[in-house]
Length: 442
Image 1 (cartoon, rainbow, N blue to C red):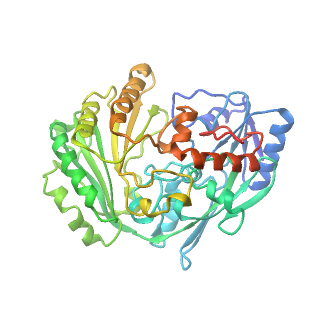
Image 2 (image 1 turned 30 degrees about the vertical axis):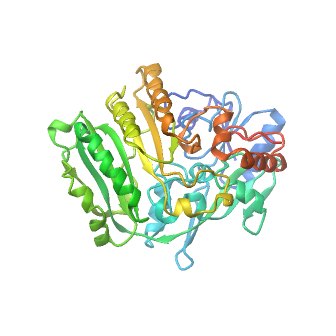
Image 3 (image 1 turned 60 degrees about the horizontal axis):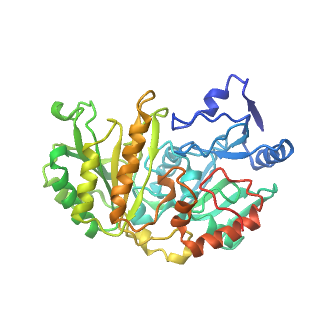
């Protein structure tokens, strides 16, 4: 275990996370390369009465992977990746990012649902559910779990699987980091790539409403193999974007076809017939597509989300309104269709509720340091308030910050929340692991 304290020259770099507006300063960062290091770090936290946070990829928008004056268990040194191509399985350390995961599995033409941003940590995304481009075909990341190794609050190393600590394993399918420090994960893999049909279509902002309505109709009836999302964004200053769209509001649709490359071309034909001004959809490496919307760390971020059972024209109008009223060129409202394999998982099989939901509306506020934080945060909150008229009250917790206990309960429903609280009471009765979307132990 390598302890990094505030006076260490490495401290500032190791403390930094994706969201630049988080200024929390732990007293010590414990870099852990093995489960034994985690056990030692927890013992130190108990001895010194430190609050504990757990950090992997660092993409918690609320900065829950840090704390002020406490101890952070940093699992990033756990970088092992062991692919079993014949068994279509992979075991990865808790410090692995999705970019690293994809590069290793794609060497064998295999993948599972991973994050849409390659620097996202495998651990946090999976424990929170695990939404990604391939979810309609493969299910969420957590749906592909075979086993999780973790260290409990009292310093025990345990394995959770369908055959061992099955209640705990159930809780790890979306219940977050409430139950221990995950040190490794084993996943099922699926044939995919290394070349896929994928990419991005762009249209001018004024075409947004028509594009969104046509996309809604396509996505509602699309095969499970079509992963996609619609976003209002600023045209980037890239050579592939016409000059008149650079710096202007555009509507974009990202697509991934999980299947034969030539079949993918046919699957997106109706979108291509809508004459996008930019057509970047075609055969490309899956690993490149998984990096397509990567953004550098250090900008300020505030996110929220709502589940929608349907997407009526009035909800699309709300989406368009906030797409045109973005307070920063870096911000985007996003629409993601669920269904497919996500919806086929039995509702009782995981803590997550509303698996039958049709859409996720995701206001994604991003602005540069020094920008007007109040104005950008209010943009995201106002979007959520207005789209809530069409929402069902549920939420995917990985897409939001700290919005209070009621939102955590809404993600699971009361019956599942009570079961999670009981499991929390068994494995972490003192709520040592509260640096997360917290479930209070019963």
